[in-house]
Amino acid sequence: MKLITKKYIVIIILIICMLIPNQAFSMTVKQEEELSREFMKYVLKHVELIEDPLIVNYVNNVGKRIISALPPQPFTYHFYIIKDDVYNAFASPAGHIFINSGLFEAMDNEEELAGILGHEIAHVACRHISQKIERSKKIGLATLAGIAAGIFLGTGGAAVAASAVTVGSMAAGQSIALAYSREDEMQADQLGLKNLAKAGYGGSGLLSALKKIRSRQWFSSDQIPTYLTTHPAIENRIAYISSRLEDNTKLKSRTSSKACYNFAITHTRLVAMYGDEGTALRKFQIYTDKHPESPMAHYGYALILARTGNRKDAIAHLKTALEKKAFDPNILRDLGRIYFLDGRYPEALNSLKGAASMAPDDPETLFFIGRTQIELGRLKEAISTFEKLIAKNPDYTMALYFLGNVYGKLGKLEDAHYFLGIYYKNKQNYKNALFHLNRALKTIIDPDKRSKIEELLKEIRKNEAEMHKEDL
Image: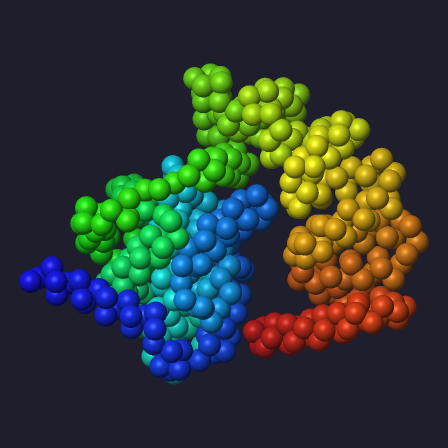
């Protein structure tokens, strides 16, 4: 009888979370999006994001696969990787989800990543944080967004975020109220497991990820997972998920070979290029010695060798990796990238074009093809390459910079100013952005580009006004 009652309670919770219309929440979708923008300002001001296209696209693809199991959502979800060793993951209102690189590094498979992301997606779908802030908003949404961002970023992040706003004793008293409750965690686990099963994942990944997070609580204070302070009752959660896995065969692991490869190459790149340099060098040296037949071992070792400046040996290990996994576009791309960094431009272009023939839309491949074409004096070809890249990846900021420079070299100054203006705007260098955009506006004829410039100028003025208010 108890099992039946528990089962129906779970069903009722899920129905409430998934099916109640947005109007039932006192905070509107528009208000939550405004709150999210404030939240993101504080987060992005105090963290370093990993913007590697391979890693970002992979995490976004796993997240989107889970979201496909949900009913239509009022928000567009975005996923980010914070460069930080501390184990943490959190979500903002309106669908911005973050995972720290340290937690990602500790994972062994895609199921674990999916488990953590599925839990955070459930917090957003249930609108846990926005509801808590709505109940406390007599302080002001902008201030509360800053406090919430500080809580989720952890002790260090909280201190920095708190100094960015005048919190006051009343606002400080709201900090505990903004953290997740045990009920929130139970609801997010229940919904997360349901969505994972619909998306084709098991639940064992969430369980093993939580156990890894729990194991860190015995470390020094600066290494205690921030996740434990914002996601309470981890022991109860582990017990609950364990019991669900025993009772439900749909929650068993079902990872495909393709998912295993995608995780392996993304995880290898994360550790080699963004982890601790000394640790990564030792890890991949040992890995290569023990597993000389593994292409991932040679790939990871090559990346960390190149990072330390040893391009000669890096190229040798990439060639070995290619012998063991021929025609892998990721390995070919990085071989081309390292040839480029070593000044071997014809060899770089050959490898990069080989990678592009298999993965024509890979942004980093296109980026380095464009840069190689510049070095070889093929400026018109470089423009074509960068414009193709930007058409598919408009937020690839460095491509905008090089495209603007190439147009400048060809004497097409209106286009040079246009793309450099967008580049500086994206970098929040508003002084240079205004200079280039205003120069472009004087001469550019294309109506779409003129409209874009006017839109960007309006946005810059608004951002400058907001920054001025903060300074006051």
